[in-house]
Amino acid sequence: MVERTSLSIRDLAVQFESEQGVVRALDGVSFDLQAGRTLGIVGESGCGKSVTARSILRLVDRPGRITGGRILLDPGTPAQADLVALNPDSRQMRAVRGGRIGLIFQEPMTALSVHYTVGNQIMEAVLQHSGASPQEARARAIELLREVGIPRPELRLDSYPFELSGGLRQRVGIAMALAGDPDIVIADEPTTALDVTTQAQILALLRGLQERKRIALMLITHDMGVIAEMADDVAVMYLGRIVGFAPVMELFKAPRHPYTRALLRAVPSILAAPRQRLSTIGGAVPHPGLRPTGCAFHPRCTEALEGRCAREAPPPIPPGQAGASCFLAEAVA
Ligand code: SF4
Image (cartoon, rainbow, N blue to C red; front, side, top):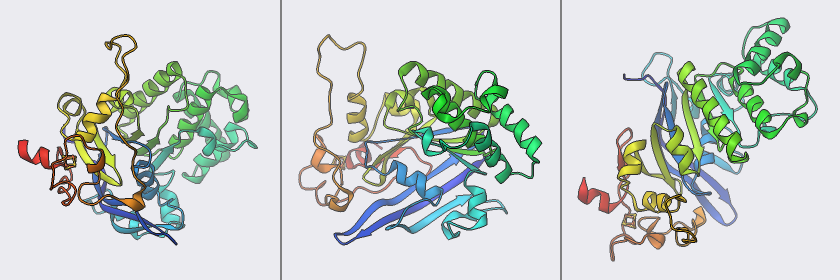
């Protein structure tokens, strides 16, 4: 089934200007989010995953700013809107943020206040994004808590966030993200702070909600296990660019970019011999202000082509197509 494209990002560029110079945090990022599908965004810390999320919501803090590209909501329809053209503080953008697009944080306390009960906070979010009466907002808050699997939601409504376990808090965080009835949800490392059992429960909850509501889910993670469990398609980011894009099965079976292969080699395996050393990716992600020449991955790439990769940048992947931004991938295409 061909799904509706909910959001199209094209050539998105974000820069941070400081006394030390200009840092290109995002450099020509393009992808689509489709209703009922999950796009996993993977990469090490500092690759631009969270900046991408914050750009979509127009939450990039100064001195950062979007310097190019488009973020199209409902692309190709009469309702198409370019979020880059909107004032981040405008009423229209506030209606998108938390309304059309929900955000789930790694640490739910980022979205919750310790001073108010979870019921108050969810009701506030419902009131902000609908014409509901206070009674209707309360009923909706109870319904949302039930939807995210919180037992006895009528009683939990009066709890403060600090009275809840990490798992329950993240469920409340998900309820908050759903309060505006979004059709797009961005989840930024939603299970990283949780133990493995709770992580599995939260992932199952997210998957169930996403399938039931046909949400376009953008799932940011550094965890390939989470990607395998959740994603339909995967974008691999490195230094502010998408260097690999593929349906999830294809990515795991035949990764086409050396960085993707390195990320997969670093995943622990239960089939490994006892005490076998975990594979790591040599070196570290350079500071975005010190982007290497040519292919930005070349100083860490074990397959770099002498005389070419340090001088020449491989072409980007056309949006919507599986591929890798690598000269070696060109050779097998
Ligand atoms: Fe490695 Fe060269 Fe491919 Fe970059 S273009 S990933 S350096 S082989």
